[in-house]
Amino acid sequence: MRLLIGLALAAILFYGLALVVLGLNQRRLLYPGAYRPLPAVVPVPGVAAVTLVTEDGETLHALWKPPEPGCGVIVSFHGNGSRPEPQGARFTDGPWHRGGWGVLAPAYRGYPGSTGHPSETGLIHDGMAAVAAAAARAPGAPILLHGHSLGAAVAVAVGARTAPLGLYLEAPFDSMSHAVRLHVPLAPTWLLRDTYRSDLRIRTGTAPVLIVQGRDDPVVPAKLAVALAAAAGPRARIELVSGDHVSILGVGDRAAEALFRSRLARGCAPAAQSER
Image 1: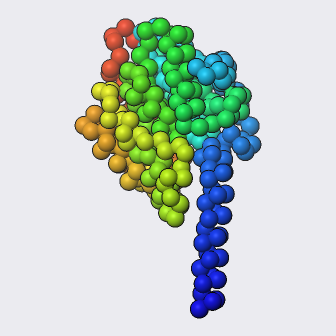
Image 2: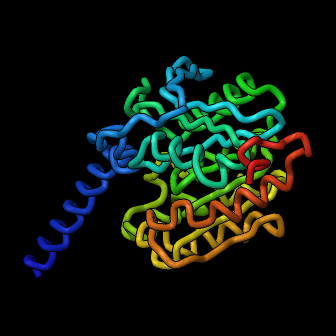
Image 3: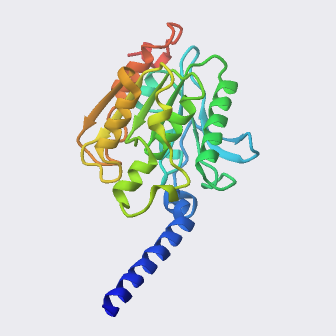
């Protein structure tokens, strides 16, 4: 009996210590790109490095390319282990280039080139600063919000506070709480400081939502994206495609560009498109 009691107490102590470690290090786990070295990136031709200033005084590294006259701007938010350069390259090529789109892609606070430390509130400030900068640099241009994984949660939060042309979300989750329960089922949800309740935020607004989700995603299981689409209601369309968390990136670009370009005014007639 004493042995059993001792084992039970040891298990409780171990569990308590694990919770303390998890609680103290949770933001290192949620925002690895701010705490671990990221692979070197190649500069993106035709895209300018700019500096954004947030409402709470942080400075952010960002990439900017203006749209062609009358066309839209994509404000793109990267995943938690990435940076803006891949988005800068992607959204200045292919159908986005032919459609005359501009792009503004910021690095979150604490990530390479940006000051501060990441948090849910902080990343929303970063997103709002990015939208404000895009609006200032391209007055009157419609803004399409894009995000991958964590970036999708930022896009949804910013979309609830603005009036975007639409939301283009890749591998999104309905809430960080739900994602954590799947990956760390023994961790109490009250321990989580950054909950990212996209399922509540996406209920506001009228802009269309396009979700692309991999059926074999081990990081964000498809059911989380399906739940987010259900929360958005009839304005959401979800495409379940073959692939995992990363391999799906860009798979839906052609359809997404056509969908959101159809919402632009007729004044958008890019030279690359007229040459086809």
